[in-house]
Image (tube, rainbow, N blue to C red; front, side):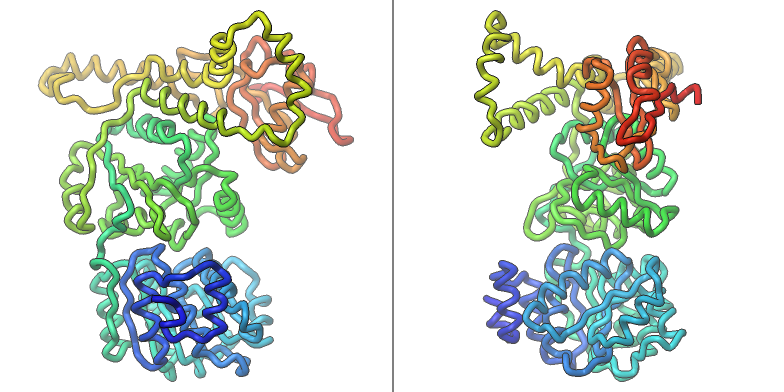
Length: 559
């Protein structure tokens, strides 16, 4: 089956060809012929990442009259990010329809600008419920001539409490020819909306209702409550190429864990309801361009996020609503690619895993939390692969070979390799060399023996003191040999981590191995350094000038 065989206009087929789309996805193949009729209501049930935007976007572009400069089609979706994504995709499809105008309206952006754009004339509007109602009440948008209404991610909108808003919008589009509802799951609320506002809708289901994406490997790891963070860290380290989202139940957890992982050198940031729209856009921009390797988010904050190439989803805790699991896991394994969804659970939650298996109709695999030595091996092999794949064709490295050969003439190849490994992995190996087994072993202690429980708790407290740092950056008992330095240089000065590292090492003439974690912000940065070398770095940088501005560096704990 091709797009041309679905009955699409040649200009739309030309656009899909230009984008490299040759074969329609199942939801597109089943939906497009139905929607092109223009007068049928439809409910489309399919997982996220299956091509739903094209399934309704292409028919809209064919049905809407570009010569009429007023809104004829309305797409309602739960979040700003999804709203922008929908418009971006439809703009690609209308490449050969220059007169067609598509507009995204959402909260967090100046409403006056959006009103001006509406007045200039648009045919298709994608909107979040709150901003659309605001425009309706201001009489800035006329829905009387809307022929087609699309409710995208309808289950998520209902989960977010938008049911009254959706009903208000549907009541204000009385002359619509058809309503198209797309959803990943089919909760009772969806059926109620369908029954009340749709006329004998055609129901199209791709896969089974509420089932999980079959291209996703669902795994779970059992850890005690006090080991949950350590287990998360170990899962991240065991997957060196991870590009993923970590889900928490609360924004407090999201912020706390993001702060801990950032201090430990991970490229991560949090997405939660306390962020301003500007902060949210910045975080999402950095995640999309992979400046951030990991995003930690609450369910509400992550609604509608669609980022390509996500390899892993990690549930720091299982969601309270089992259907939310489908939405979380659906962030990976998109567009035909495979993905992994990992859940960290308590032993008492085994029953919930069985419920999820029944709900999603896919098997969940119990996995052991990797041992420290296994994490080290995985990281080491990943480093070797990167080393062998490094492109050396663009530099005149051969000019340095004589010097290198002379420098290493009395050093064996094995010694060079060991030094390279030590330079890259010394701190990492020290962290994991005596790492304890985080898996729950039923025979490791007696549930009825208070002495064994007490001893186990003491061991956990010792481990925590050795492994974690407080918010000031100082080590707890067992490793207080690092100072934390503040410096008034950041990304605004044109630095990124690698160039900043090189700059401070060149200025101070110190070795890389005296440094710990570097936390860079826009205006300032914090540098962990061995206490024995901290004064040398302060003397080398404090008071010097960079691009005409005086550098300030001091001990962060004395500020």
